[in-house]
Image (cartoon, rainbow, N blue to C red):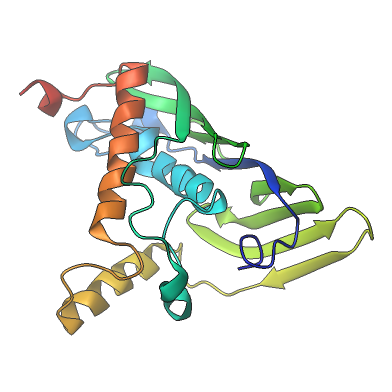
Length: 222
């Protein structure tokens, strides 16, 4: 709402998102999901999807809206993302990416996002995302990109700074599980906040990234 409805920092020019964890890969057994390619191991599919989703959300390219704003949510906005171009680079070891960097550019709004993920090191500091606009910037803080707990708005002209804090229990993952459980309990075949087509569109983007960096899993060949 602050970004895309109130335009509090003006036109968005660029976005930076990072999710970095030290998963001690060398100490894990071969059957660990974190290093076994057959189990979808790698930074991209494990934590890179969070950075991609943050980038899309801050681009205003997803229909991830609060329940009260569902009427204004676009319909299947990522089904044919012709205006998005993505460049990718990965460090691949043992058939999995240990680090991946994405650069996404939107011709629709001349905005660019840099999204990085790694399993090799823990990020220093708590700021995992920054949005730069024509009137200021917004930084988003938290222990990880899956658990934001505050955002800070800094406006250029007046030097004003405002911080909004919000509580999150756990690492944020329980929110995903709770949302699925509530839909199942309500008999919904898909989420109203995150429609199936949106999930498929994000998966298509991830597949295009894997193809670009040469990241292939055994199932791709079977």
